Image (cartoon, rainbow, N blue to C red; front, side, top):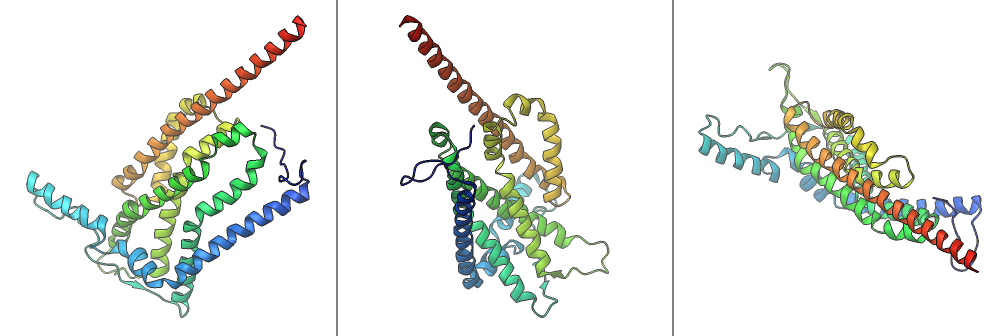
Length: 299
């Protein structure tokens, strides 16, 4: 794929290096403006951001905790378990504390910034896509037209998966784990929020695997045969990644590993589709060349 950025409709011709930098600067500025705008919105709606979103997974009334507890009771009734609340998590809310004078205001600012980054993700992707799109051929741009929507959907799906599935399990495990009954857990609010945001952002980025596979295949770094050949190695890597972003229990690791394995298989299919389109385009190009040579010989 030959990269040769073109100017707009008013001026034909290739852009210089400085013009590339100027164009990139404006895309970055617009991305930062989108992040700041959503950051300010998140900062203003403090009660919604903290009480209904950030602090919600530690409560027993949170939807995931409630559904798990209801499922536990149903399962216990059918299988005659002695403990009907075996899957009830976060029954006792964590006691969060702030140990610095400016701890709560700095936490407010940092969380608003992270919220701005998450919400502005589609706008940031669109801006960078707008910068790289002129370097693509018409057919390449057409095939990658849905890249912004697909990457945004995958990112938000990953964030929601981390928030509704992994976060409650991690909070329950890490918040209730004790090395001794003499040691009481009093969790710093920054530590709690850092765990929650790292889980959500990590799963959001990991869910971008199909998009990464698409572009790596486009530039010739990977192929579907390569991904199939190293499938076993990838499974090991996936379980390692799952162990890093989840609490150290098998159940949570399996919850992360299963969608990642499915995404890997989807990525193989996407890579194979890209290769088929490349081969088809190459064949059409060769056929057109052969027809042109035949016409010249006839003339």
